[in-house]
Length: 88
Image (cartoon, rainbow, N blue to C red; front, side, top):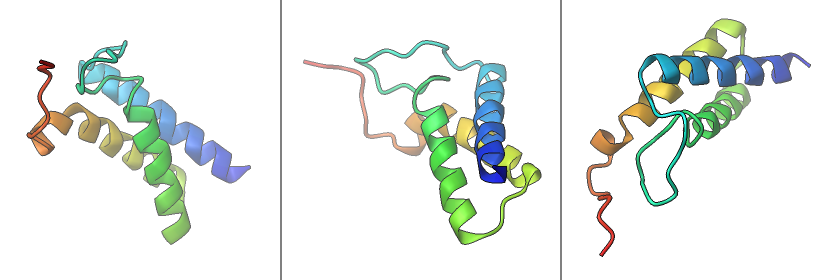
């Protein structure tokens, strides 16, 4: 039960911080630009599962994971610069 609460806290914090950072709420299937709905929640859930497997989770670490996931999703195009949105 505690693990599900940590997942939920991480997910909610990622979505809220992503919205505060000004990410788009809807996602475009033809674009690699990150949005609040994709890939932010999946990065948050994956990181929470990974960190939960490696160390013990608490609410503070779940919030930090959510913040990191949203910042990572926001700057994905700068971290991985080789992806273009031009489809020819």
